[in-house]
Image (cartoon, rainbow, N blue to C red; front, side, top):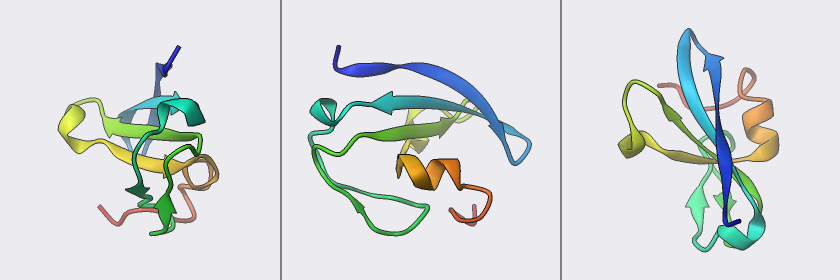
Amino acid sequence: VRRGVDAVETWRGEQWRVRHLAGSAADKTYRCPGCDQEVRAGVPHVVVWPVEEGLGERRHWHNGCWRARDRRGPTR
């Protein structure tokens, strides 16, 4: 299985779809909005987007940054 199962979490009063990706499914490098560092290819991470806005707003977060999102993360 390349992709994780989507879950829905509430953050900042909004519902967010969260997908956990295994390292084998991570084939590109992304910029984590939580720490502004790279999420490198091959690193397990989460893909997060607002349920109401859809896939166009996807962001790739380090697992730890997403867990600590109340202390860090985008000023959206």
